[in-house]
Structures are given as structure tokens and as C-alpha cells.
Amino acid sequence: MANLSNINNILRTGSLGVGINRDPLGAFEISSATKPGVKMFNTASSGKTYEAYSDTNGNYIIYDQDADSNRLTISSAGNATFAGTITSTSTSTNTLAGKLRINGTTTTGLEIASSSGSSSGLKLYNDSSNDHAYILNHYNGNLVLGTNNAAVITLNGTTATFAGNVTTGQSLLVNGVANNSSLTLGANTGNWVFTN
Image (cartoon, rainbow, N blue to C red; front, top):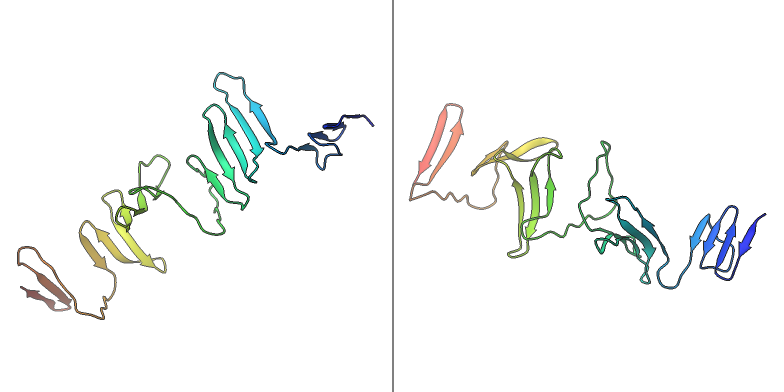
């Protein structure tokens, strides 16, 4: 069996060890007290240089040398931080075990679009300037909230339509415009209208 070794490197027919003075535990092993990793150069005109390494804090990092940016960081606790957009083209269900946290801005957070060509869609975000939370339809269609896969509240413009009964444990306050408040109660034979 071929065996070429020195104090830092071991080369065997089925494995390679770099920076170690023992047989490698896997087919390819790199050991260092500072920054063990691999650098990859693509010499094509649009190619880039990437590094994949483990830092002294226990993080695994994929680093874009040309952009001087960590593209992916996996912490020692297993948390993954992406530098850019995460896109899934899978038609199957993607399952997330645990909590998903999105650190947005005052008007950005989670956005759900109907297709990759849509400019926007359903928006969910928290405005840190006033601690307000928002659920918005970017377009002029309805925003529908429901349970049991059925609509309960349909919001359109400034109008809210309830699919069933509305129950309140307190008084019901109706605010109109320019002293023209009204409350309309529907019945089978007609409507009851209360005005101020």
C-alpha cells in the first residue's frame, strides 16, 4: 500500500490528511488551530473565489472572497444565517422544526407572493418605530381571515364583512362621519336602521 507521510500530512490510497500527524478519520481531513478550510477558485470570466472553513468560535462559514462577505454562517448552536434571499423551487412541503425569526425593518418582514413573477403579495411585519404589527394585502383585493379552511372575516378597503355572528361582551360603538353615524340591522323582512 502506498504511504507518503510527514509530520503534517498523510497521504494514503483511500484518504488524505492535511495538518495532522495521524491517520485521517475520513476520506479527506483538514486540521488547524486557526482556520481549517478549503478555498475554491473558479477561473472563468464570471467565476468567483469561495472559502468554506471552521472558525475559532465553532462557526462553519461559507465566505465570498470577492465580495468580502460571509454568505452562510452556521453557528456552534446549529443556527444558520444567510446573507441574501432564500429561495425554494421545490413543489413539496418544506418543514421547519422550531422557531423562524425574521429581522426586518419598519416596513419589511415576511412577504408571500403567488409566483416568482409577482412584485409583492401578503405582507406581515412589525414596525419597530411604534411597535405596531401589520398584516397587509399589497394589492386591492380582499384580505380574508378564517378558521377551519373557511372565511370568517373579509376585509375590502375600509369594509369588514363577517360570515357569522358578532358577539361583544361590552357596548358596541359606531363612529360615523360628520355626525352621520348609523347602525343597520338586517332581518328577513327588512332592515332596522338606527341613526344619530
